[in-house]
Image (tube, rainbow, N blue to C red):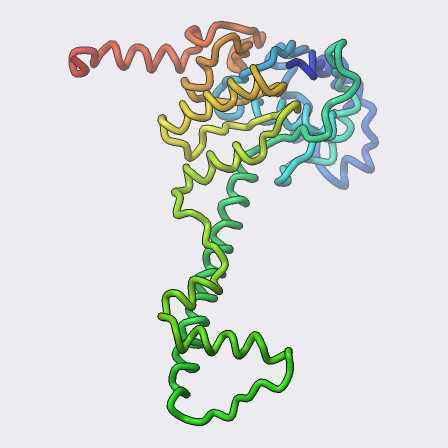
Length: 299
């Protein structure tokens, strides 16, 4: 499915015209012309316009502008963002100079569309850790509660059920009397999240956040994922685009993602930025040369 057809960035002359007329009082209150991000980044790469496919991949070295492009698209389209991002006072001014074109078959970007970044994955992992720590604390409380209640049996602790308000306490005491510590605790303990690794949890994050019929921007989703999980993510994204009406724009270094069939690939290290075959990317060629050098070791 195609929701976003193209995105256009300001030219070098557009940027210069804005910066020359930027109010100096506002400039003094924030940044100098030597740090006007996101200005003075993309024109130097000859990046004027991106045309999108159902799956579009942005590749480039660190600092090449991949995340910047995704953030600009996300903010211009007002996509849902689970985690914040760093910007400057110039960001909104830059957005005003950007343009986009939707596919002729759609009226608007679906409401469920979102940008998913490493910060969002990290927050998700912290939430899981907090849940599990809370479960651990509650488990210890229930152990102490069980022992304290068992210790009063054989003596008259004076408990009597006087009203329905005492029913839960009576039920709890009967369960302690008739059951084991483990059965008592398991009935009252909130379910702990599965004991997944960070990589496995990161994979779950993407499969939970990506829904049907929407546009999703993914910023290096391969982070924390093993090669096997990267391959599983590719399968999930391919099926989502092919059968469930999703469009993806992904920044990545992963050979697994870059090899996705029929994806449009842009090399942000090239000047000007152009579309290319994934096998033409310099770092993919480096992988290829490495394995060719060690070919006999695989036999």
